Amino acid sequence: MTAGDNTRTASASAALIAIDWGTSALRGWLLAPDGTVLDRRAGAQGIMAVPDGGFDAAYRAFTAEWRAQWPALPALAAGMIGSRQGWAEAPYVACPAGFADLSGRCIVVGVRDAVLTIVPGLSWQAPDAMIDVMRGEETQIFGAQQAGEKDGLFILPGTHSKWARVEAGRIVAFATCMTGELFAVLRAHSILGRMMPADGSMGHDPAAFDAGARDGLDNGHELLRRLFGVRTRGLFGRLAPQAAPSFLSGLLIGSEVRAAREAGRAGEGVSGATLIGDAVLCQRYAHVLAMAGIAARSADADVTPRGLWLLARAAGMIGA
Image (tube, rainbow, N blue to C red):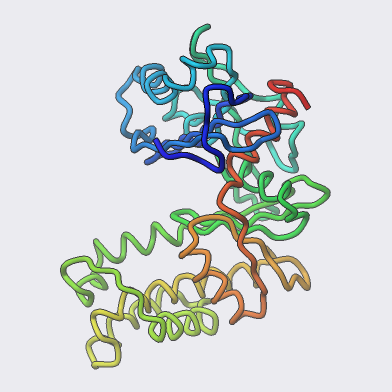
């Protein structure tokens, strides 16, 4: 176990166990009444690693030390644990939605000595009838807002990148782009991967990344064609194998940013955005966004426990 912002002592006052339980990872925080992180831990038991019927045991093992010292401590979780593949499904709440909408729709699982409350995800049906969903990102966005990032555009890069609009403290619309997953599939299972190092190495080449991002920003409207250009650049010696992953990454992110601007997801006249997620990936998105004329700043690393603390307060699980 790794200490958090403050070293936990036997006399420390704890108010909440906050959990982010995703597809491939499990993270937890022990929070004080004011939301301060007293302790934190992480594990590899994402929902896909838990056998059928094993969520109760996994939860008990993960929180055993905290619950032993504070048996009556409430616990709140966000993420894929509330999906159909998780412990129990917490039905999506339709946007626009804020704290009150989510806190009133939480579900409870487990038994008396190890109860877990689960935050529902959000859904949004766009004007073109496309339906989008998120689980966990809504909690991060609320946590970022409490840290001073108010209304506007929030971008959460990752396997499935999210672009969300927040107005008056409520998430009013969002869209998902499978950018990270598409990169992984193309890198590992397409002919483009044959143009890259066979050992799967992923070193970052800034010049190649910039070239790919510029191609995506300028020509992302024909992404399927531009993707084949990754192969032809290699065939004609214009892109070294070691640089190809960076070029592909830049191309996909540049195309994502272009598509978002054209679809209006960035909002009319928006010149700034808040990024939430892995620091390195956020830096790369910030770079491409700057190329597109959008200034971006990154939220701090503890938006998830902060968001869960706020939701727990809204749900009456801890004192305001």
